[in-house]
Structure formats: C-alpha cells, structure tokens
Amino acid sequence: MEKEKKSITIKSDPKNISKARRFVEIIAKQYGFNDSQIFDIKVASGEAISNAIEHGSPLGAKSNITVEADFSKNCLELKVIDRGIFKKQVKVDNPDPRHRGRGIPFMLALMDTVTIKEGKKGTTVKLIKKLK
Image (cartoon, rainbow, N blue to C red):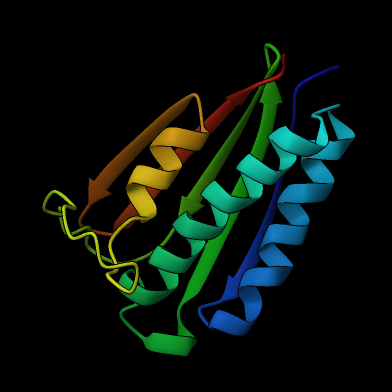
C-alpha cells in the first residue's frame, strides 16, 4: 500500500481519548493489522494520548493534541504531539496496582519502537508497529 499520512487533532480533554483511539483503530484495520495487534496499538497510543492530555497541555482543555498516522515500508508510525515539556520518569517498582506511572513501560512492551522527542515547543511520542 502506498504511503499516506492522516491526522486528527483533539482538545486536551480526557473525554476525547476514545475519539483518538478510534481513529488509530480505523487506520490500523485499514492497513491489515490483526485484532491482537490493533489492541496493542490502541493501548499504547491511548497511554501516549493520556500522558499528553495530563502532562503536555499547558493551557489545559484549551490545548490541542495531534495524532498523526503514517504507513510506510510495512510499518504503522503514530506520533502523539503535545505542547508540554516531557518529564523523565523514575523506574517503576511499586507493586501496588493503584500506583501510576506505567504508561511508558506499556508502550515499550506493546510496540516495536518507541521514541520520545522533547522540545521547547512540546513533546512528540513516536510509536511504530510492524505489520507481520
């Protein structure tokens, strides 16, 4: 399939996470990912989107989060782009299931590649899943 980039921009409000996850699901189905892979992609992107809303929205609900999807060379590349400053996390070693801070480890476990690019104008989380 030829390379094609699509995107969605949502207001930085938790109620919009499902809209962005649905966008990702439609894209993944379009390019032939199976149900298990789609689940992984939705969970990982949902974590990145949730983090962007919570930590990357300096204007709160007035901020925007953009999710870009690009399919090329048998890989789906998702970018979650916000306007906040990334804060490095400490190692998660708290076994309490109510403890937060597991989003990045989930992304790393579910996707083939995860990169976080920090900048003065925002943070971009890139998630890549290979079509197998």
